[in-house]
Image (cartoon, rainbow, N blue to C red; front, side):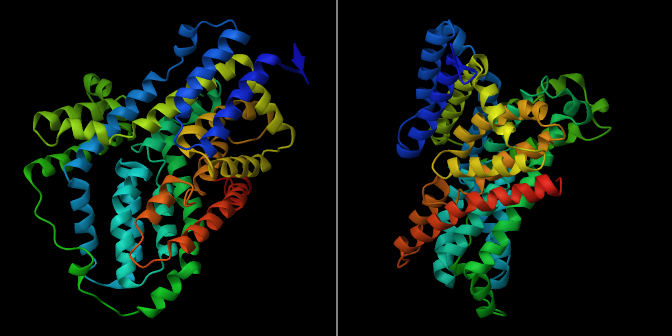
Length: 454
C-alpha cells in the first residue's frame, strides 16, 4: 500500500522518527534511545516482516565500543583530578592580564574539547570555573556563556571527542554509497576537514557574538588592568604520580592515532601496531587498562561518570535509522529535501532544519544519526552537491543552537552563574540567542559550505 508514492512501511518508520524527535524535545528525561529500539522492533515486525533479532542486529557495535573506550579514558582523567589541574595551570599562565582572559578561555575550551573529553564534558568541567571568574571580573555572564559553549561546540567534531566519533561512525557507513569521496580522501582526512570546517564556521559566529553582547565593552573597561591570578585560579597541588600517568596516556592517545595516519609514516609502522591503532577506541581501551593497573583512579567512579544516557540514545536511534533505511523512509526524506534543493541551497536547508530540531532535541544523539544518513542519497539526487559540505552543514547547524538554556550546555552555564547574577534574564538572553542561531546557522552553512565551498 502506497500513500503519495511512498510505502506504508516507509511512512511508519518516518512517523517513528518524528515521535522520537518530538518526545526528546518535550520530555528530556525520557530515554528516547530505548524508545527508538522499541519503535524499531514494532515497525520492523508489523510492516517489514523482520524478527526482533534482525532489528537489534543493527546495533552499532563499532561506534558503541569507540564511544565507551574514549569516554572511559577521559572519565578516569576527570575523576582523578587531572583535567581540573590542567585547567587551573592554564588559567594561571596569563599572570593576571585580564585582556588575555577571553583568549585563554576560548583557546583552553577548544583544546580541552579537541583532545577527547568532548563538548559536554569540557563545559561541565569549565562552567563552574569560568562563570565564577566572570562574576569576579565583571564580565557579562551572557558573553561568557557564548564564548565557552561556542568554543566547545566548535571543537566538538575532533576525531578524539564523542561527537566527532559519532560523526566518524556515521560517515564510515557511507563508504560504499559515496565511493568517489573515499577514492580521493581517507576517512581520517574527512574527519579533520569536518573538524576544521566546524571550528572556522562556528568561530565566525561565536567570536563576534561575544564581542557584541558585552565582551568588547568589558575589554575596553579593563584595558591595561591586571589582577592577582590567585583570586581566579588558586595554585593547585602538584601533579601526583597517577595524574602524570594520565597526562602521558592522553598524549599517547593523540600520538598513536595521529602519527600513523600521516603521509609516509604508515609504511614504517609494524603491522601489529596498525591493528591496535585501527581506531581511537581500541587505543583508549588499552591506555585505560594501563591506568587501571597503575591505580590512576577508582574504576567504579570512572564508569559512573561516563555519559551512558547519551551513548545509549545514539545506539538506539541508530537502530531505528537502520529500520528506516530498510523501510524506504530514508529514501523518502532524501527525495523530499532534494525536491527543493540545489547543490548550494541544500546546505541552507540542512543547516536550518537541523538547527530548529536541535534547539529542542539532542544534537549528537538524535539529530546527527537522523540526518547524516541522508547525505549519500542527496549526493545522488543533487548533481554537484558536495557530501563533505552537507555533512558539515548538518553538524554545524545542529550545534550552533546549543547555547540555548534548553540544551545541556546552556543549562550548565546558567546553573553555574555567579552569585547575584540575574539568571532569569540570562535564561531569556540564551533562549533568544539559541533560537536565532537556527536561522544564522542556515545562512552560515549556505555561505561557507555552499557558496564558498569550504
